[in-house]
Length: 194
Image 1 (cartoon, rainbow, N blue to C red):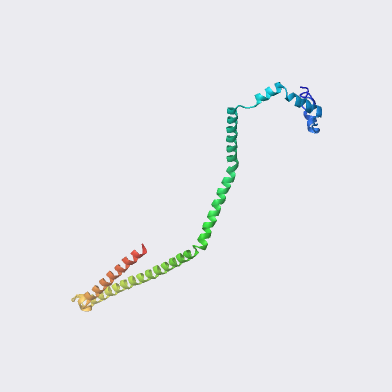
Image 2 (tube, rainbow, N blue to C red; image 1 turned 30 degrees about the vertical axis):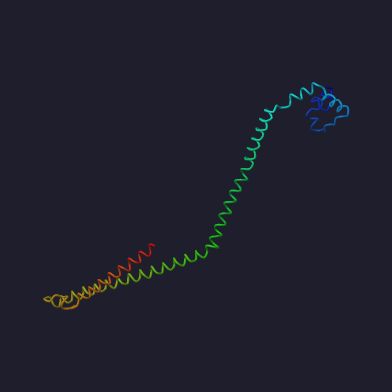
């Protein structure tokens, strides 16, 4: 047991200040021989046997080490996994934009043309409709003026008989035109909502 008190293992012989400045010296051959001869003694073997673990203790230690390693790997891999998820989202977003521009570019251009065509059709139809309304209002105003003038000239004769002998056929024609316009409008509304 003199090897325990020799210079290379004794804590008193190497204070902290000396350890920081000097290299530890290697054990001599006599120190090695004492260490090896001491390890063959029964006392050392008994103490060494107490250091070994039973099967149950080894299993518990193994499971604990495995659990610690698993948790550590998960902890260590979390930033990598989050980074991979963000990278995957960026790649997917870029790919979708690429598909919209390259493959969907034709359909977008077609969509724009259809929108422009619909706008032109609507504006032409509104213009036509407003023009028709204006013509009807103008016709009605002219009729009212003619009725009034004829009434002023011939107060005893009913105005519509004197000025317009076939006035009934005119109103019938206007009614047919009005019905046709309503049918066309109904058809166009149905087409627009499809």
